Length: 232
Ligand code: BTN
Image 1 (cartoon, protein in one colour):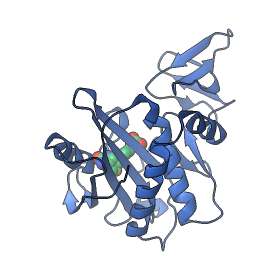
Image 2 (cartoon, helix red, strand yellow; image 1 turned 120 degrees about the horizontal axis):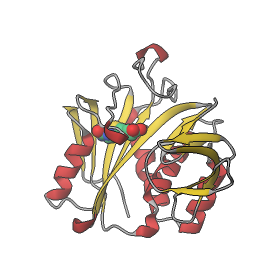
Image 3 (cartoon, protein in one colour; image 1 turned 60 degrees about the vertical axis):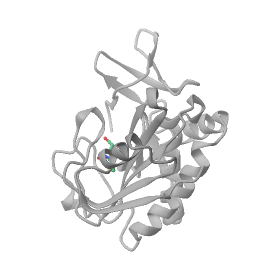
Image 4 (tube, helix red, strand yellow; image 1 turned 30 degrees about the vertical axis):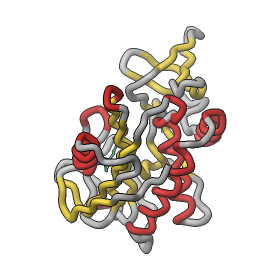
C-alpha cells in the first residue's frame, strides 16, 4: 500500500473526488491521488457542498484498490486524518464524530467523503482538511462550528503526512482500528438525534455501525446517515 503516486494536482477543478473517480474508471492504480488548490463543486456527505478558500485547505482524493471489508474505511480514514493533524501540530488531540468527521476542540476540522464502486473493486477516499481558514471565512450556514489547524502548515506537508497515515491506517488490524476509534469517539455517552429517533450513543459495533440506546432502553444500530448532538 502506498498512497501519493501518481499525483495529479489541479489549480482549479470542480471536485477532486470527481477527478479521482474518473482516474479510477480509466484504470489508475492504487495510491493515485488528486489534489487541488481550489474546487468549484466540492462535495460533502449527504449531497452537501464543501467549500474552502483557495490554498487554505488540503483538498485530497485517493484511489484505493482492491476493496476489502477489513479496511473499515469509514473508521480508518478519519483515524488517519487525526494522526495527520496531530503530527502537523504538536500538542493537539483530535476526535472522531461518527460516521467520519474529524473534530478539534469541539469544532469540525476535516470531512471525509468515501465513494466506493464495489463492482469495479475500488473506492475514492476524499478528505478536506482545513489548514488556514479564518473563522470569518467559513460559510455562515455550516451545520457545525468549524476550525482550522493553524497558519504556517504547508499543504504539501499535510499531503505527504496524509499519504503516510493512510498507508498505515488503511492496512491496520481491524481490532486496532476499532480500539482507536473508540478512544477518539466524541459521541460516546452523549445524547444524539437522527431522522427517526434519539438516544444516548454507546459507541461503534465491530462493523463500524453506531449503537444508540433509546429512552425506552432499546439498542438501535445505525449503519449509515447522520446523527446530531442534541446538546453542545
Ligand atoms: C463532509 O464532511 O461532508 C465530507 C467533505 C469532504 C470534502 C472533500 S474535499 C476533497 C474531496 N473532494 C470533494 O469534492 N470532496 C472531498
